[in-house]
Length: 341
Ligand code: KG4
Ligand code: ZN
Image 1 (cartoon, rainbow, N blue to C red):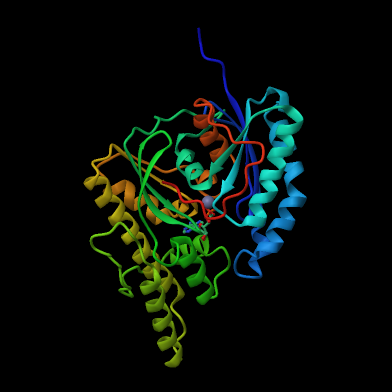
Image 2 (cartoon, protein in one colour):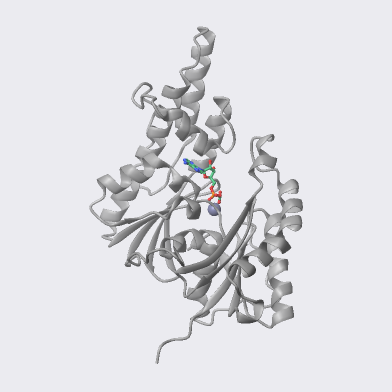
């Protein structure tokens, strides 16, 4: 007899995207709605926490309704509600968690609190209902998680079994992109702006440092950031117009080189079968091309729509907890600094 299909409603409000999605069996996306607040935060050059939670409150009901409607499902046809419990902004997380608790209370469906980073990892399993299923990632896996808040190397030994090997000692990779974009007067969010500005730029113009941090699996981006700042200052002192394309391309290359090199070294050291790259920075074209062309192992990188924050990844991860009956108590609280390990 075939297994029943398990449908999970996912909710994500950890940062500046309000999102809801329906995913079946941890892989098939029936609907995925993301309302980005990026335009609102752009004028502050970063996420403004109070504004973010207020916007989540306004958006959450219609987003959840649209996700159900687009999947042609009612809450009664859903098996469980998965919601991002952390890490993230406390005031933002609370909005999603309260919505999930309310829905659970009204419908009797179980609740599953998900780690946002785990969600990013499980984005590698997903495909659209009208798309082609790709091969599932095979364990053990080396996961590079690179977003606005995190840059981590995580050994994924099996489903839901993680060993955090290292992470950034200062800025996350995405944060470094955002800060350098601001320095170069490029728009927020910085990752896509730097990538765009790099097109046609020469990545070898400025040899910005690549911090190796030998003997650890940690990253540091403060050196490259300072080096870009000093270069910009000295060009400005000499009244040179800033070579934005070359600065952007050289900075991007310095960050991406370190991410790729370290991930491949870790993959070798821990003899993993495959690699996953996930999180907002995995949308970066240079990162995608470089790691795929240099890795001897299969590399999974989600399509662009699943790289940045979304709720399909939360629903996807939720499935693997559901089949273990790993549910959260009705009074569970948000965990703004929850590490994945
Ligand atoms: O995963 P995400 O949507 O949110 C967090 O959990 O932080 O990641 C957002 C980050 C931002 O810092 C943004 O600049 C970066 O991902 N990002 C990129 C690109 N697209 C988004 N960084 C580099 N290149 C890109 N194409
Ligand atoms: Zn994220």
